[in-house]
Length: 283
Image (cartoon, rainbow, N blue to C red):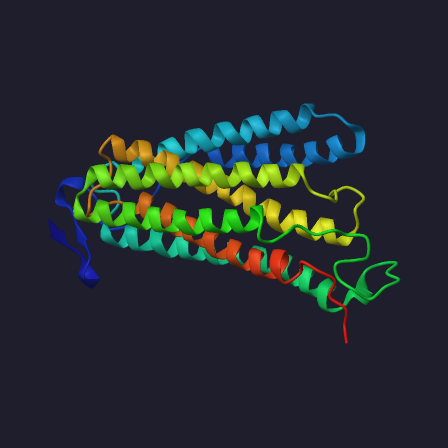
């Protein structure tokens, strides 16, 4: 081991003369950008002209890039000497900033919801000052939404259990906790799909309330799917013995993301499902 300035340790066997990881040139960012652009263009073409060819091509590129890029990141994390202490610290800062940006993403949806809920006169063409608008029948918050709340809260405990088992060296407990969290995540997605299929209003042509409702809850559902994918990857990495009590940032980042998804859902349940369950007329 060699000691660099500022107290940062660099493994002598790594061949590095500094503690920072300079990534190799990769084609995936530019190809992923092209795939993302085609996806957005495909959404426009599908909505206006009913053509899905560009959308399917864009999604296929994005999914392929997600796979190969993720594969390279996992290989990088397993290469001795690359993830030095200062690199791992930088990864934690990066994940923290990413989650902070996701928080602000949802703040926009909540802002839109409360703007119309507290000031219903802002709804275009509104004739009655109430929220939800007249004619909108909301979901019963203590039916599927409450069940999904219990599912996500339970999943938060199982992923924390898995994390503690990993730290304690309990491989079986870690895999059990991860497996239960994945099952709970899939259950949440299934119940939300069932809820959408029974929705008394529709996103297209339904007005302001359905638009805000489906955007906020739908994007949260998308984040649950992404978080479930993270956990599935972590499950197979854990089975392969790629995590140790000292080095498991991939698992830790997935757990942070999952807790973020939990917290956002609590705000959605309280503010949109429960507080906004009936007509709210200003005094």
